[in-house]
Each structure stands twice: as C-alpha cells, then as structure tokens.
Length: 155
Image 1 (cartoon, rainbow, N blue to C red):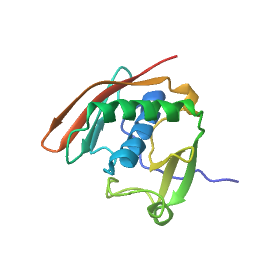
Image 2: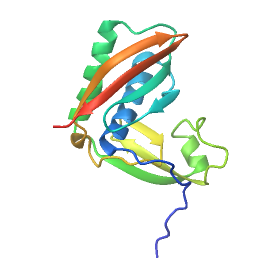
Image 3: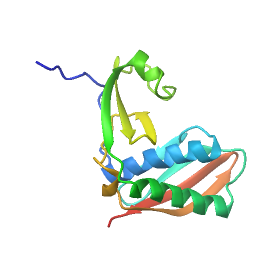
C-alpha cells in the first residue's frame, strides 16, 4: 500500500495556469538576468505581479525578449510533473531558502519539463499547453526591485 506524503497545508487556492506561468517566468528571469526567483509574488486569476531583485531596470528590448521566451516555453507543450523527495534530496535540486522553518520533511518538487524545478505545494496545469498566452501588462523599477505585472490570456 502506497503512503501519501504529509505536506504542509497550503494557505490559498491558485488558478493553475497563472501559477504555472509564474514558475516559467521565475525560471526565465533567473536564466536571463541571473537574479533569484521572485522576492515577492501575488498571483491571481485576472492579473499577477512578481518582484525581482535586479541591479538595473530591464530595457524595453529585454522585456520584449522576456515575454517572448515565456511564451516560447509555454508553446513547447512541456509536461508539468510532481515528485516527492526528502528535504535533503530537494536541497540538491532546488533553492530552499524561501521555505518556512516548519517545512515538512517530504517536499513536493514541481517540474516544468526540464525548464524549471521548484519546491511548491500549489496547483498547476498538467501541460504548458493549458496556460494560454503570457502578457506583460506593466512594470516599474524602484530601489533595486523590478515589479512586473502580467496575466495569461486563455486560448
């Protein structure tokens, strides 16, 4: 008989396409700018925002490239998979610095194809083809924090 891992409770309900798009946005920011994943994120069904620690504001060209790369990954029809691993195993796969102190010993690793892996207990789509189109709505840069506001447009 297979046992179900005991995970920390989740405090909110996400809209799976937006939440999965956040994973792709985070991975793309890390790859393009060498920054950490979002410092702060607010993910909602209609629109979302993420804050990134950057040395300078991205140029308009970089912002267009960011949006295009996120959409390219979405269009790649990548499977979104889940693995349950020990805390120790997870440390060799993902950054655990944002996890709470009382995190469970078993962690849930969400992978978006081979593009991203993240410890996460949220709701996700099964394949990136379910996300829709990623669209940056606006952005601002203050005191080393770049805030990007975005949404996904359902197909």
